[in-house]
Image (cartoon, rainbow, N blue to C red; front, top):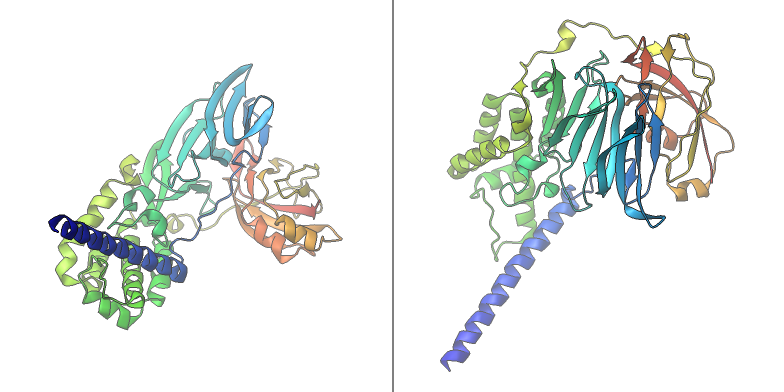
Length: 435
């Protein structure tokens, strides 16, 4: 009888534990669906799961190659990247799940043109590596960044200085029991090389963080915030709590954290702690503040060499130079969706000393969209491409449809060059589709 009673006790406990975790999973799934916490973070990559290929020889004589790993003459579902010059070869990555060329030919402030690869070793990996190699012979690894989920270099102010926009996924992964993938967004981090030192320049872009804060506050319900303030802040699963109530508490908690992080990572600690004091449960303030500080200390900011002051370069640079190009060379550029592009057509004021951008990644429409109704005519788009090769604006230059305009925002290029240096440019492209 004693043994039977013990067995029944264990069974009841197992049922309770199972119900507990089932309820937790159900609640988190509801939060994901309602808030988009668990939305898939997609990014443009050159090779993914063995699909995609790119190869070009830069002006320095270094060939950059990305493609599928071959085995026995057949492609595998993994990707490889390499640099070749004068019969020599340097392996960048092999058997990776995804490899993307973020920039090629840009100057990141490391003394010359570079190629930067964004590497994810498997589909289940949350974080990526960002490996920066010189394009001078012999090429060499200049820096590796880790801890961010994504990286995107951009000439943000169109002044020739390139920032690396990333996030602190490693710092907040597992924060208060939640993986970074469950967050609406990990804290934004902006980095820049200055005199070859990697600096945290996030404070220069406080207006961007303010936009994030304003967007989150717009969706912060006063009644739900009051309910969260009256909770314990930890929000353990309670069997008797209705799921919708639990969901609202978690949604509010994540919004508060996003606001605090936006202040903190943009160099405004006083405002961050003030926001925390006014929105977090008072009994849990000391614990959560220590947790936030610990998370920030173990994240991507460990890799920086210094922190830049919160001054905006717009104070001393009142205008930017955007060059016009006259590109009449036909160049094919396709991805798995078969989008063909030719560079040419009328430009604005042509400057022969400015070389035209060259495509790295031109993502088009889905195959189903193309088959549903192929355009009968060629389409023209006007692009502004920055010194990092990223598209900064897209305008319809004729009869381009909205899908092409939307797709063009994610295109990557080798930037235009003037007197050997990458520059921002205006560029007109002729686009059509192929089956």
